[in-house]
Image (cartoon, rainbow, N blue to C red; front, side):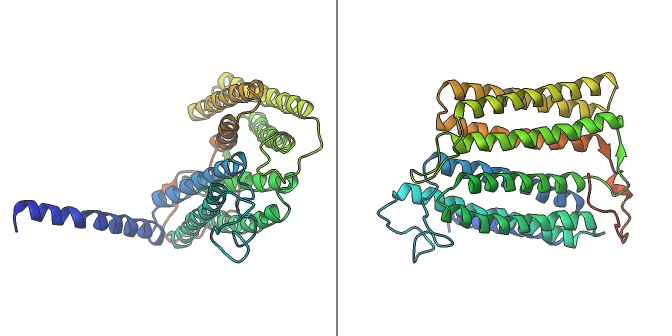
Length: 340
């Protein structure tokens, strides 16, 4: 065999070997987890849940909401897309592709559960937070059937999005808790500032609810057969904008309070990042409004809403501490309840 033939043979075996190696590495990161790999699984869950939230919006924005008009099958008699007179193949492919992404989210959720159960010492808080993930995927799958069978009723679509918001919160809690110890939560800022952080989280959630009401009132229903909320779109858009200004005011107040009280730098930086994400989201929102809500900008706005939510949660977690990870002695049993 010539040197060129040997090189070609090694190159041919290289890709399968690398794929197999990465798969084994991924398996061991869950089956024999470290604190670092546990946190990576949690981060993957945050990304996966945020990602499928955005792709779910893309399904609606491309008019593919009923691309698979049946559930759990895609079309009557078939779990995969089959020719259907009422739906274009591209719409069926988009909706079916989003359904397939649910299995990726489920796989990541399963990885989180295995890693949490196999972690030494086992931490009860992480186990419970990890179990939320597959439970949420199952709930979303069942509710997805309700969305389809209701022909994309805006109430069911809104709940679908808000459950995703809850799953992102659960995944981020798992990510935050996996990077710290299990000592009782200790405030790093004045209690009134921490309270302001919780008020901000509530305001952002109200903003998300207002956003789905606007979405359910305006265009981009996902299918021509879908119904809409019977609200005035101009009034809903103005209400949504009013809540945006409340959130911005609370964020600025939080940033100012953290600065004047000489709060830890990571908390101040977290609040500054949040303000930057909110301002970018506000620019996208106003631009899409004046351009008659083009689908692409609406998609960016949905992405921005998930980033605002994640950045808000991050600020709250940065304002308290539970001790370092190295305080966890091997064999210790964690008795602390799940919490922030």
